[in-house]
Image (cartoon, rainbow, N blue to C red; front, top):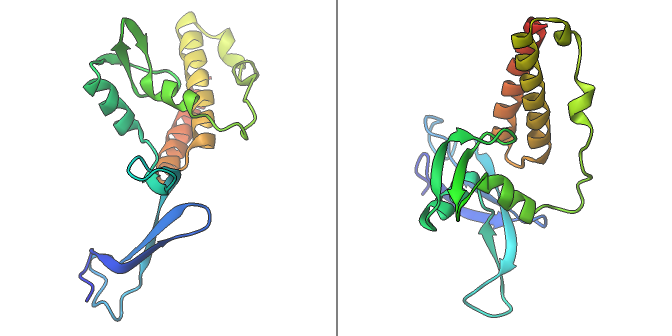
Length: 178
């Protein structure tokens, strides 16, 4: 029997490494007449530490997991945020760094071509305004470029939606600023 909002008896993996789970959304009626919702969660394949040579699927590291790991290792979370990803900066072993960007650079996929030259392409009439507007416009342009890069590399659909909304809001603000 399937209870509302609880995982169904079956789950499985597809050939690309994604794990799917069926469940009945709350408020959708009884389990026989309900439509099933399929949720995808990305997993990566790594060698199991328990059994030599056996490949297991474990979840990829998320930003929260990376930051928690550095906090447990003695890192100090600062009040400043990373200009490229927006996560808090950390002081770790005497240096200030973004641990999320550092982890992503270490595990970067080689099949993505490098993005270059975005900073110089977005300049416009904001340079003719007062100095405060120019600084704000250039900062906003850099943030929008960083958001574009982050959207391109994001795997979670919900996070992409949130980032796209932020990009839209930022573009509207930049238009008003100019």
